Amino acid sequence: MAYQNILVSTEESVAIVTLNRPDVLNALNQATMNELVDALEAFDHDETARCVILTGNERAFAAGADINEFRGATPVQMLQEPRFLQWERIRRFPKPIIAAVGGYCLGGGCELAMLCDIIIAAETARFGQPEINLGLIPGAGGTQRLPRAVGKYRAMELIVTGRQIPAQLAYEWGLVNRVVPAEVLLDEARALAREIAAKPPVAVRLAKEAILKSLDTPLDVGLDHERRLFYLLFSTEDMKEGVEAFLNKRRAEFKGR
Ligand code: CAA
Image (tube, rainbow, N blue to C red; front, side, top):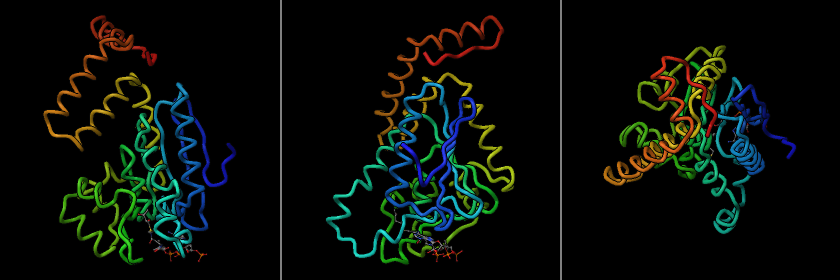
């Protein structure tokens, strides 16, 4: 698929997807979401891609859903479009995604960042859920993921006022992993992605699955699930390699098997 709205590249075992609609601050229209899902699913099938970086440009990670697509839309159209199916498909992407966020990260943009597994923010990043100003509420997970990330009270304030917060406050509230100068944003994301890419991929994948499970299951169900995944890893060559390498005081070579 030739992409019009995103740029895709790979650097060794790291895949980079760049949202590329600068004229509209990377507003997420249907075409962009289709391309994003297509690119991610291709990386899922590519054994050499072990970690993904999702980024935008200096001005915006993404300023939300494309509001042009809301004009005149009916509830039935919204229901029938694959709009939220795409978000579900991203949610099920099994490899780690690092969001490298600079500039505006609003509405669906903030929801997209929260769908990622790690968020690195440039000092210039601004986060918010401004849907209230359109007579809407977040529709791609904001009312669910933001309270889980920052707590009920902070999420409530952000969502019902539509205010933006700067990167440093987002960090203090636990929404982002770290804040870095804008000029090193991608380097930081790359370094982290390479570190993750060097780990045994099956274990990384199951770690992601177990952590995501912890957010929507009672503790005992999550612990059972974790235990099964832990047992499963004893069947991998990488686990045997990791243990042997440790015991023989050498560096492990992981193959993803
Ligand atoms: N959809 C469509 N176009 C958008 C857009 C969006 N979400 N955000 C920005 N743009 C466009 C602007 O219309 C403008 O286009 P023109 O040059 O043709 O006029 C261009 O991008 C640049 O934007 P501004 O001139 O507004 O730039 P600014 O620096 O003055 O303001 C901003 C930046 C505060 C982010 C402002 O653009 C803004 O408020 N954008 C809308 C943010 C928003 O409401 N997001 C939520 C969308 S709804 C949603 O996401 C639902 C969901 O949960 C899935």
